[in-house]
Image 1 (cartoon, rainbow, N blue to C red):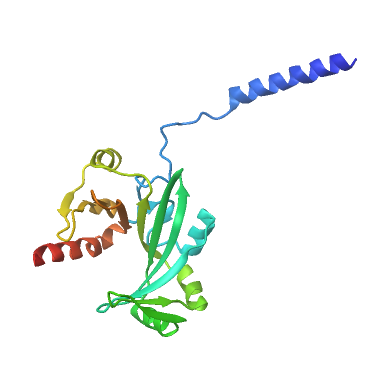
Image 2 (spheres, rainbow, N blue to C red):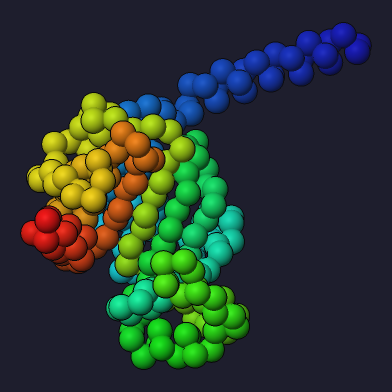
Amino acid sequence: MTRHIFLSVLIISAIALAAGMLYSPKIDHDRPVLGFPWVIQNLPDGSTQVFQITLGKSNLAQVEKQFNEFAKFTMFVPEQGDPVVEAYFNELVIAGLKAKMVIGFDLQKDQLKAMYDNGVRISTMGSGERKVTMHPDDIAIVKQTNIISITYMPAINLDDELIEKRFGQPEQKLNDPESDAVHWLYPSKGLDVVLSQNSKEVLQYVHPKNFDKILAPLLEKKSAK
């Protein structure tokens, strides 16, 4: 009797497994993985999405939940110019790739000034730049603020051939006059890929309408040389 029950269960299990294989959805191995840095989606409203972050719309609270990681915050104040608030992840694994990530925010000048005044601690660096430890209340505000830029630093090495294969030919290439770096520029994607023989590669993403914020400083440095 026990033997018959065992055989019946085994037959039913085999039939269920075969049915599951027959009716299971087909896996599309060519489908792009949304977490890869070269999968940039141009949305109908003109914005772009990368790493499932929509520039100009997504906020850090959503990103921290998505990555299941908490970012660290710093405010930098140059000797000349406006303060900059950045959130950074020292190590992320997205789509199986290790990387560091720095995120910039759509903060107004009056907000930045208030956050600077509320700073818990201010230290001056060797370059004259000041580094501000932000107040927790201001960090909470930043977490709800729209993300306008992403700087992605992959652990793997990227070369010309791989960049061209994944991103296509750039619309423009500019040599950095202060280093050996070459900027591969993709304005329609809001992307600047910085390639260097002596430093790690860097990918900078912005909303395409804000691409001049990447391009203008490069042209200014080039004309000053």
